[in-house]
Length: 453
Image 1 (cartoon, rainbow, N blue to C red):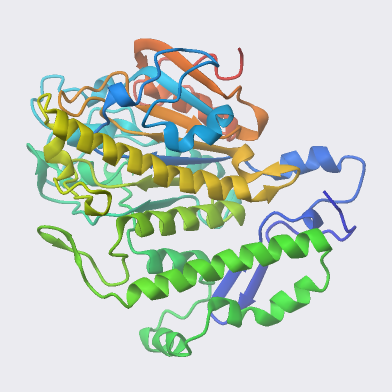
Image 2 (cartoon, rainbow, N blue to C red):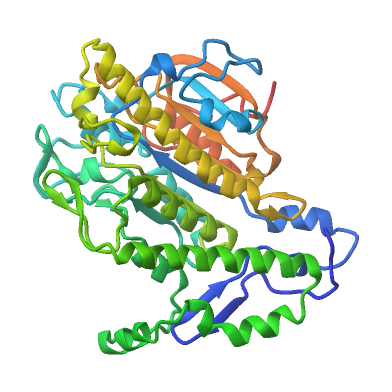
């Protein structure tokens, strides 16, 4: 790491008309003194991201059979094999509150609602919904004041927050994994344009629709509006920081161009009965990649340290024709042992993991201090259902990639008893982002063995 001797504030923005572009972590943000390396680790924050896949997975193609460091890379894990030393694969973690517990059918709604909360949602299709606060929002309340956005919630499928979506359970449960309170879900934003404008719009961005339309008619990149600030800053940076800034600004512009390209496609069908709004990519993989790119940019620029992403709402019946699967996802998970359906679901599971690898590649490609952005991440991937055919809520498919600032011993498969609450893992993660707590849903204590061999 090269330090130029010039100290730049971590919360510096490039500003222009209706635009505020935060900066990535630069060497110039570290004072030039004997404690620079130690300070770099302190300044580089720890972040948490949760990526949720609906309908469970084919566990036989996912779960390693060997615990410890010599665990095998299964078919579904194969796309992220390059990150074996950076990952923790968990077996035996359970969400008891995802089970019926006397409420009858509705496993998909309960799976999503309990995934980050550990709470059994009230069975209702009316306005009297009740769940619990989710781990991401506990973190957001504890550290959200240190960033521009306390958290961001993203997804790919539109969903209602009212009405009956699963056997008497409100749609709010199936469509949200993030809850800021018992009665307050945080529905994910699915439109990349709206996410981009939220991340890079300034606090004094015009609210008048006519003014905003006029700005858009300029046909300029948001980087054009901050060009003067950019040129001024670049003249003060050392060669390493200039390269970092070039890479960062290129990534911002690349996202912007891809969004513009997708907006030209207009409205297309997303499922048999729901139309996708203009601006949302027709291609699922491109949609996911855009969202992961914006999550990465948000972490890189320290716009937020907490994020959730839903590949699809729980119970999703999306089809995956680009990978050769024409059947509806949820329907196929009730395969009853049909080998053809099991193979198609496995292909979907692998595809989802391939897209997660894209996110990991982006995080690993970004230098932060003397390491990578990934080294300061806790990127959790999983589902609130294990076996989709049986609607099981034990031995959930959950893994985590990232070093949490060096506080984890990664590169292992950790096997716990089948009734170890998943919320115990979340308590341990909250410790690592500086928000310690002893309570979350049905947690019984902080998950052990994350930092020891």
